Amino acid sequence: MPIRSSPTARQLRFAAELRRMRERAGLTSAEAAGLLGVKPNQISNMEAARFGVSPERVRTLACHYDCADTDLVKALVAMTGERKGGGWWEEYHELLPAGWLDLAELEHHARMLRDAITVHVPGLLQTAAHAREIFRQAVPSLPPPDIEDRVSFRMKRQRILYQDAPTPYEVIIHEAALRIAVGGPVVAEAQLKHLLDMGERDHITIRAIPFSVGAFPGSGQSVYYAHGPVPQLDSVQLDQSHGVVFLDAESQLAKYRTLFERLEAVALNPAQTRDLISAIARNR
Image (cartoon, rainbow, N blue to C red):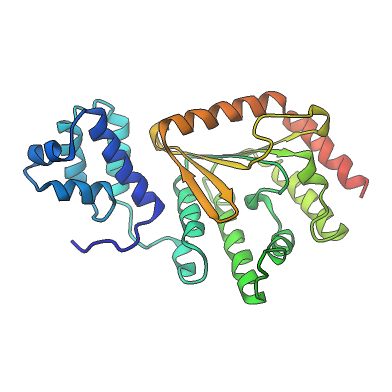
């Protein structure tokens, strides 16, 4: 089996869950290798996503590790059968940073998505004109073809909201993001109308945090939470100035679940949010 030169974030996540399963069993790599009858470096390679793992091996590892969580094992087995290199995002392989492709793959497999954002409209809800203006403000500046590649990629990511079985999507957005006139009055008004239209869809929930709330949890960051088939396979994505960051440690997931609960406690409900967006649009 060929060695992977650059495993994807999803492959690394799968491998990390194998390592966590072993660690919960209290076994070293050498002990696990002994149970399987393989060399210790094979365990290390599996847990670093250097090699693929067959469904049979996942089941065998789960048995040796005394893992009684059948839902987790079933989800991991399903991940082994995913087609390699078949996602639409692969066409951008040499055009965009790897983290962007990992994000699209994460969204593709998510059972539900939750977004909390302060000063930007979430990418999945941006119009093309809004997204184009965001990319025009990049530092260092991007050449026009690179801007169009990024806009095209962002629009294709949005397909998960339009497919036959669309991914449920919950958004918490601060009033500041609604009032920033990205691209000027015409683009900004069209963006607000788009938010109102998208909020009418049954699988999309948009809630706003108004200025009147004052300070609120997580006000200095944007958080993207992707629900996996089981809670252990949830992921958090953070935007950093140097690129995309993925988090999946149990303590981190618990922290951000709590953060969303606290944000929901101070946010307007969907109807009140719609009224706020409409009022902002009227006053432009």
